[in-house]
Length: 431
Image 1 (tube, rainbow, N blue to C red):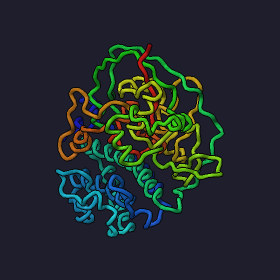
Image 2 (image 1 turned 180 degrees about the vertical axis):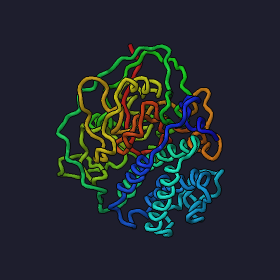
Image 3 (image 1 turned 90 degrees about the vertical axis):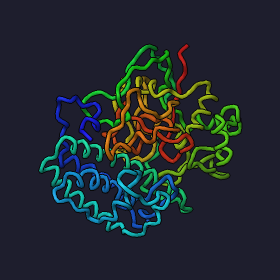
Image 4 (image 1 turned 45 degrees about the vertical axis):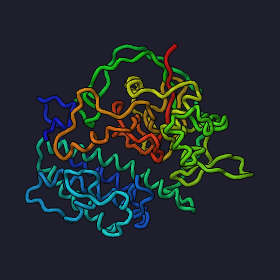
């Protein structure tokens, strides 16, 4: 494995940028701040096979640095606990056997205190290694590990939200943000010319391998909505029988809707009579009335696609989304805002909410770009092995670290999944 296989956009004649001790500490500390007020019981439970306990996330992100970096570059390497190599491996078959994912919530041992001690030990050794100096290949792996940890910071929030939602007491992760008095601006359509364009990452800064290589695409002229679809707009779809009209749904989507009994976005529940509000929604701030002007969230690809059909529109391709986003500054409602919940769009002109608030479904299947080659070695399993049967989402969410996102970033999930902060915006062919 070479540094250039990890930093696909890095010119071969330039050295890899150094990860500083300060940056390493900052990312690791951000993870610990997210869980500092949680109890050991909070951190041990697993709500479903797709989610993981907080304790496992803390161990796995540490496992990455110990296994992928220290094991290869630390003089006289010895693991802190040899059994952690098995317990905290996720899906790296080449690294060795793994504890079954659906059973991560059964790990009452190691204790949360022992996992925090594991983090402290690896942090100290990693800082020492970074200060002593590491070659370009190792530095690229440290950078990858930091972005990997930022991915898990978002997963920790979404997985814990799913766990809290199953508690009949409707507990809050933190106090709910004040309700916004803002109103979503009227939806506008922005026209983009067709032609041959380029998408994909370029430059010397970090990217994941699935963002490369940069390549040409051919787009017809298209229109993109100025903001994400709101709860109020989605309620109109529901009121018009959107969940009962098979003609709006893909066949797999209809079968899933029927089997799961969907009648609203995930975490929505009937508010009951005499409340003045038809729906409540479970948030990281507890149960709240559905705010009509916020982006609709926690919807599957199937629901987003059905709504688009109902609205005489469609979902954008990832190329259309990226070409539009490349013109927009990376700013928005990210995890740093502390809301941990989507916010109302701001501004009547231009494109709003391209970054932050909700991940936006595209109609594009997740696959390799033309000429894609995964990194070699253990890290080859990071992205490429998942390029089947999933769809691409773009833009980040209210749980995404701002320094982690960019216009070329490709997230991916199965079309039925809803527990992430998933929303969408509309597109249509230009007249």
